[in-house]
Image (spheres, one colour):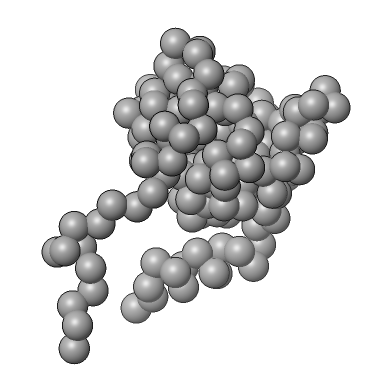
Length: 155
């Protein structure tokens, strides 16, 4: 049996990560990759990178293929395009990028540190209406808030 962290570390053996400021530089230079946000829709609505699109992790595989209700043609046809997968912390995106590689995506990377790092670097995030989101307001959202029962029992 593997832990979640062990699974992520395995995926990191084949997945390239990109830092938030490097991704912003690519965008600023007019070479924006396709940005795929694998968080849940309610997370995407709070804050996301401009021009990214939401493909929740739970439907990623079928969104990447034709003949499914979840099919996203722009994604299916992007197997040779530069793609950056993002999530809140950079873990789900690493797993998603590894799966996308298995599905034949050649140039897929993961956003290192996720949108939490993007926010820390004070890069722009927008809400569901396309309005800029205040960096300080999103700090609460990006800070883990674990309940006692979610913590590992002390031995």
